[in-house]
Image (cartoon, rainbow, N blue to C red; front, side):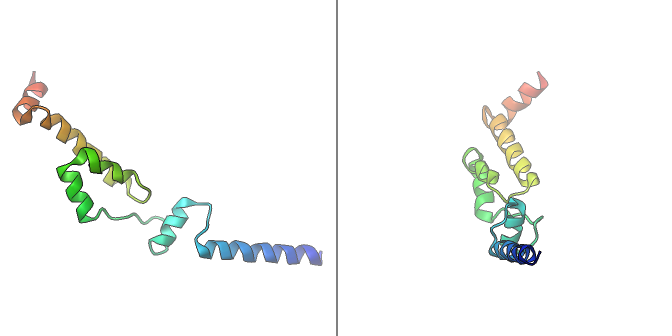
Length: 101
């Protein structure tokens, strides 16, 4: 049993070293380690990306699908894209007419 205990100790040491290096099998844990150790942390949408989504959403909203952005950010971005396309097709009055008729 002495050999088995030594093998288990070596295995535990290798697993700890891999976790400290950030090489975990859990992507949320890896993201959390990259974002200050909190596995529930999300990347903030920086002002440049937010501006791009506001002005040209059909191009920039897709960047929200990268790992690390919250579901709330993604939903808001795609709702804005939908609203932009709906209203932008023929202006606000045309969109209002489509809704009312």
